[in-house]
Image 1 (spheres, rainbow, N blue to C red):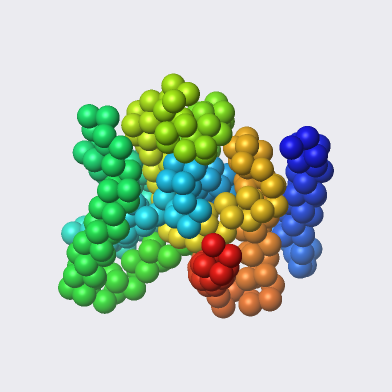
Image 2: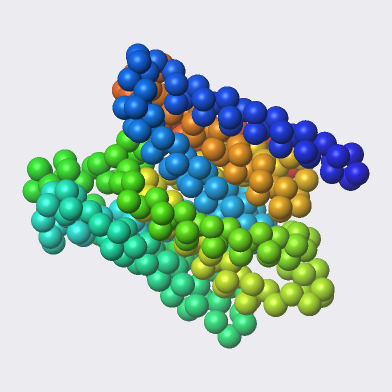
Length: 321
């Protein structure tokens, strides 16, 4: 244990070096002398990488501790499907193209609010009266995601083809068309939620021992579950509303963090996971821009890599379980 604690600062320093080097490389490579234009364009992406990386890592690590399952991510609650339905509904019933050109902070906050309210109502309904129905919550989330996807598909089929084409830019994660006016409010929300989880980290360390042990040590499990689900949903809601749904990013980051950091102390996992997420996003976008010449979106690379990693982890756990 002492050896792990001593090695943690070295690992953080190594991750910081990777992040700093990748930032410099991303901001300066092939600017062709147009420094002002390149820095203004790429710095916005860099801010988005930091915000999404921190939000996703904190949310996923907390969620996996809450569910005691390293294969699950918060998206299992149906947040991605809800986001897709909200955007599709806006484009279907209103003038989608006009709204796309006149996005505001109010629209951004409304999207987050709908996703959080959905999760809160779902959690409150299934976890009320002190009942520990967390896995029922997950099952209902999967079923609701299927229902929401069906409604979304129906609306998209009935939609004007031109509206549908414009809608696609909102349904896939993209770091190329982020509205910079979202950054301040997103940063404030994420900072508040991250501080909350940071102060709850010692409780999460205890929760990692199991619900029974945590209850014996005086932790109110149903109350903790509800508050954490609200925070997790808020973090994922902000991240999704900012850049779009990225299902496998949290899964990749959390599982790499467990192996690389080598401990289950959440403060160390939060720091390491955030740095790993930021590095993967920056390096991934660099590869997409410079190697694939923007022919493949970063979200597709993440989903493809995450899918392979997920299957590999399932096979590994099955062989060694």
